Image (cartoon, rainbow, N blue to C red; front, side, top):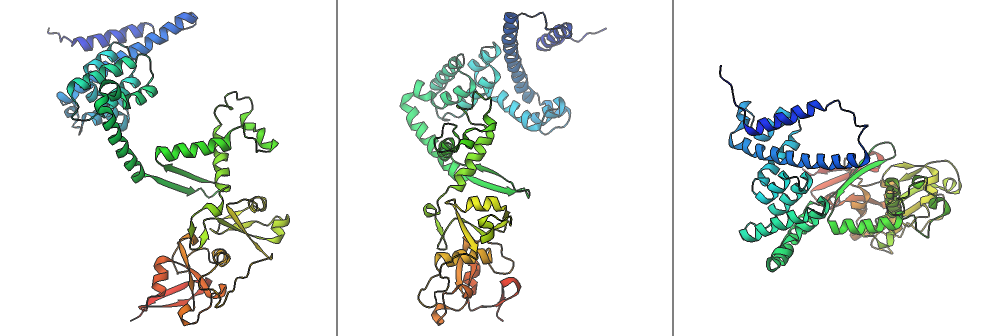
Amino acid sequence: MSTTTRHPLAEAVARVHSALDQVAETPTWSLSQSGTADLLTDLARAQSRFAELQARVLAHADTVAVQERSAAPSVAVWLANATITTKRDAVRQTRFAAALSRYDVLRGALGAGDLNLEQAQVVARALDELPDDLDAGVLAQAEAALVSLARVHDAKALRVLGRRILDVVAPEVGEAWEAEKLAEEEREADRTASFRMRDQGDGRTRGSFTIPTLAAEMLQKVLIAYASPRRDDRSGADAADPDDAGDTEQVRKPSRSRWGRAFVELVERLDPRDLPRSGGVNAAVVVTMTTATLSGALAAATLDTGSRISAGTARRLACQAGVLPAVLGGDSEILDLGRTRRFFSGPQRIAMTVRDGGCTALGCDAPAGMCDAHHEDLWSHDGLTDLGRGRLLCGHHHRRAHDPAYETRVVERNQVEFHRRT
């Protein structure tokens, strides 16, 4: 009878499993305070050592093409299937294993349990991001320095230190490299900046954004000013925020709901006089309401985008800088200027926004802020700058309206239909 000798690594893992089986049902109640503390730190060290062993074997798995056992396209896919983990996590593990195999000092420290997996991942990433043409000796110094720093700094601090490690081991190249890297990151941040809002249909809108760090820091500073419980310009009701009750950390860090209300207040307080002008009008929301609503009635109000808001919110917003109230039945500015003025005035544009909502070309959904005020009767042909003879058209349709190749006609709901002349 032949016996198969297991690899020493496999044998060691088997012994660990056996030892754990023996204590699987051992209760923890008899552990003392100091014993519990010691055991937790020992377990963390054991986790680090196992993480190194796993990474070492995973790097070897690529060498022996373990994925061929199940015709998987890669080691990562094989690992995900074999261990029932997500492919994203499996890819992360295989990439770390490959990185760890390049850095012997880091691998040794993780294998000895001197730093944890999160720290090792940060150090490996920091080393991988150093210049490709960096002298091997300088790279070795950087690795040794970061491993040493990991003994007293957590992963978050190491991430910052890793970006400045060349200032420590090679200051003659560190400054130039950092300058180049920062410039590249800032260009990429500007290129990939994005903002998205999605109306949930229940009076709430969700949003997400990606912006450069500088802009994010500026936004955070403003929000902290609005969210701070120490604000001296808030009412007594605001000062007693129910979300903050019993939260001793609140003075230092605002709650999530307070952050949200701070962002809302920031948006509502934007002064249209400080905002860019679009089509002759500041970028402000127009709220249409009746005089009855303004004086206390329950009738809802309408935004220039078509959304509806409660009467109470409309009355509150009527006093906000970033909102222009258009009160029906109240005093109004002169909206018909005849031949006394070539371009439509701000109040005329606001009135068109309320009336038209956006581009009046049939089938176009361009918002009012992206539209021009168009003379129905050409100014060059003695047309009047009157509200009744003006309409909103987006840039594309405004050009078509002045294009002799097209004719237009007004259809239902004051929309314009374009037809190419034959």
